[in-house]
Length: 374
Image 1 (cartoon, rainbow, N blue to C red):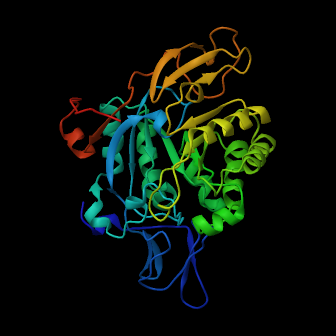
Image 2: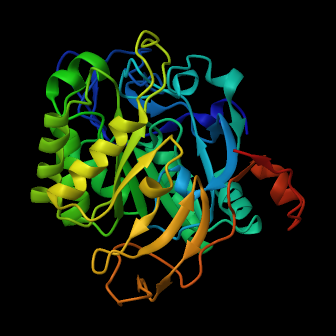
Image 3: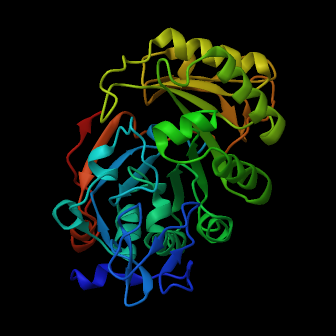
């Protein structure tokens, strides 16, 4: 693959009267003149049309547990081949993948892999799914869509880890090839989105409603709690009440711990008590499944039956230590557990492995890879 191969035409844009073009992929609707790049940096105006400049290029490939996405109700314990590219269509000051999402040196950071190589590597490595993550897959939609189609041809499921900042028309195409999604609901005020993400809240809420009611995508939500910014109990309660009213009671919600990074080094890490309190608010509001993340919390990371209260999946970090599910129901009382489950969990555990999909395909089925603990 050459550098020219990574530039592909896109379809979600139109020409303006002043000679510029407008990208219609996300709610930013960037206006671009010849040679200019959008806010995301990876979509640009070339020869009078909008192109994607990172097709087939990645910042790296890693096999890790599905719970790391985080997805707790989508084939627990299975392994996922995860990858991303560079750039982002949000400007989060607290970005915890900023070396990728804010990268302006795509060629220096990128590893090359065609969609078919990624899908075939996932199959040969025994992965249940491929996840588009690390930076937001919305901005490399064409690459993600083609990879997702190649995955489905091989029986591999697909996961989008996204902020949900996408316009309605491309949203329908993008998520039509996704089996699951974790949407990062970064806060619950437009002030938070404007000042800390350089974006707006309502398009994200619209995506959440659409995913739940207009798609077949399995949905889970993450809320990164930042001390002094979006961790007020009242805001958490209002968010949970909105989720219950608009999405129902069975969408899993993950409260995740912030650690100082990027342009918010002056904020302290999230206290575990804040996450545990938020989880209790979610459960008291009526949400059935609420979790804590980025901390060690056996109670907050495990899944409980909404019917009898029994612990049906016990987790220690990303390791599943006990499992009581039969036909996607509680093994004790038979109450359905929302999600996608097998009668036995996967056994990937807390490992991860960095791989080169092209090399995996060339080795024709070998599965000997170095493992490192998370």
